[in-house]
Image (cartoon, each protein chain N blue to C red):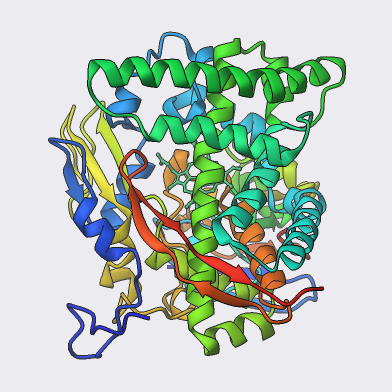
Length: 399
Length: 106
Ligand code: HEM
């Protein structure tokens, strides 16, 4: 555990419990020309303003004239709201409890059985399985030969998209690899799911897309957005939360003896310190009025720094780098602070992610002999501007 | 400041001094009204800040807005006075407002 005194907090001798801060500090690259916004209040006002639009390299290269071909991540205004509204029920707290919880429990049964049989396993492999199973249920990718194969194919597409390198030859190579991998995902996962939904609609994203006549490209894009936004983020967060709990016995004890509300408070506080997404870019399409840095000129681009907003003492109170699960309640703020964004694009999967992480860790830490055999390396994924934790291995006693 | 009364499902009451210009949800959270969870922080995306507006106040607070509909529908809450408190701005017109909180926000 890092116990270096937190800079900016000499009076309270606060610890710096963050594990991803250093790699983020070294690698974070806000979009060129974008003003960085560090205040929580200003960031929230900007993200909530109806006068801003998604910005950043990929968002601004999207052809908005064909909305049926693009993910709602890139849309704004009325069209965005309608698309979000159409799938809102899939993420509602009630749906999580009555429907997704069963998937989480089932997946965890399989993960536990597998871990007990093997004796040890890479933690990010286990967390990936959980993230994929839950997102697959929400999206409706239910007709794959197995969820393990689905997980492998989604990973192949996402990995090839994040390992993209500049240069002519690399672009050709990237396109060829990508086409093959997307083709496999289409053939084995998405096309069978669409066919099944054409026969009988269900309550999931693919059914919605079938009803709305999305193009093939639109469906692939939407599914991959969920893959990137929902699966990759949750995989990292589960490993990060597990790592904190493994090395802090008192926190682990509190997690295991606490009620669900307290367990969520612990997870949310870890996410505040270790946000998986770090930067949110927006461009003003009209002048935005506001105070404390929230005002924007027409056409101006900003980069809301989630890391800085989450440690803004105006909203965290003293010792912002210290892991303190009682902080949010004391400060009367929502627990994850800005880790799930804010405004119209705020993460719809926030509660889903917190629930699956809670279910995963609650079961994992109750396993006899559970231990962390090796700590992860903290890597950086430049495409999503977030940390990646690789190499953590967990072991437990056989069943 | 205006006075707003929250009545919980067990009949217990909490009266708060609400600040105009903030939402009813923000006022409830700031004053520790336990039954208002508001886990999305006021974006109308979670449906966990639901209140049931007392019949006499419904005209003043107004009907459910379009932005509230999806989450109210998803919550299954069919109370005729249901609203998301994050979408009710507090104004001087709300002096004496009475709302009830549902048994569970999820
Ligand atoms: C710990 C896990 C997660 C984190 C940290 C996270 C973070 C975020 C953030 C910061 C945004 C806002 C992006 C922006 O404003 O531009 C976002 C959007 C989104 N997230 Fe998540 N997310 C997580 C899990 C999930 C899950 C489990 C799902 C679905 C199964 C999901 C689906 C989405 C989608 C579809 C969007 C786009 C929303 C829109 O543009 O309206 N996320 N996420």
